[in-house]
Image 1 (cartoon, rainbow, N blue to C red):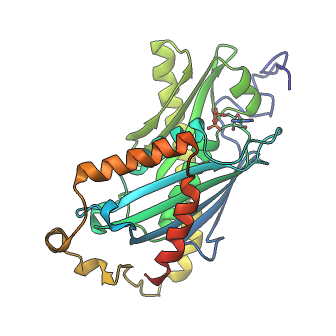
Image 2 (tube, rainbow, N blue to C red):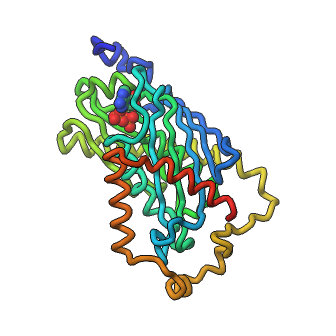
Image 3 (cartoon, helix red, strand yellow):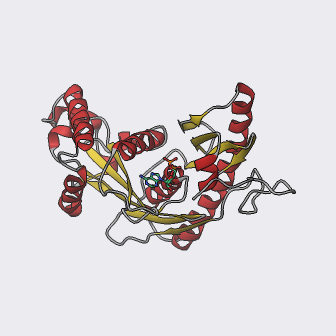
Length: 304
Ligand code: ADP
């Protein structure tokens, strides 16, 4: 793919006919995986993403449990066939980084303190990639978390903004991403609090401020699409009573943090962090893909 001669037509429209402040069409399907607690299939332009949520369920090994909170694990993965040239399967530095920042993007909203000792696993599989996959994955993961009934303060919406030929544009296409001057993926809460921000390239301070305003517009549009999708899914359950989630044989309302601390035989917080660091370095070294461990856990968690 070579650089296009120009990125805008005589009317100021982009190569795919969009205005500078227009996102690509997004389609959301909820509850597509029967073995997951929550799931979402999301198409955004030519991106195709599948998100699955497992949990909350008891975390194994128990020494990794946190007595006061659940932990959230997030795994972003590009399928080998998701891009034009096949990608080597498994985690790499880029996927490890995206997994980390995406997990952190959910930290302010997921009410993890309700599930001490538990784990919530989020898997985001990129089936087809066409620029903006980390933001597409976050949008799908939010819906999958909601589908799993995970209590959250609100939804997270994500979108990228960038600069092409000196103009700020929302939701970069592949050409704009490849040959543009800047790419700024952002995730935010429904109140507009930013939970993820990264940047490739250069923007002036004024451009940065303008870009943040533009990306807010994009995230708002996405939030509306997410809300509509969830309304469509959950309006049919209006009259049904919702069962409380059970973690490790204890209902959510019965979980007492103090009790968990007294009876807990887990390691200290520092030990847990050490273990988490080990997992990341294992990923980077490709010694032991966490994929296997995670899927073993899923099987173990079936008795929840
Ligand atoms: P994002 O997908 O979040 O925009 P990047 O900016 O890193 O993340 O990637 C932009 C696009 O480049 C991806 O959506 C994908 O289409 C392509 N891409 C990323 N990594 C690879 C890779 N290893 N091989 C081929 N194409 C890739």
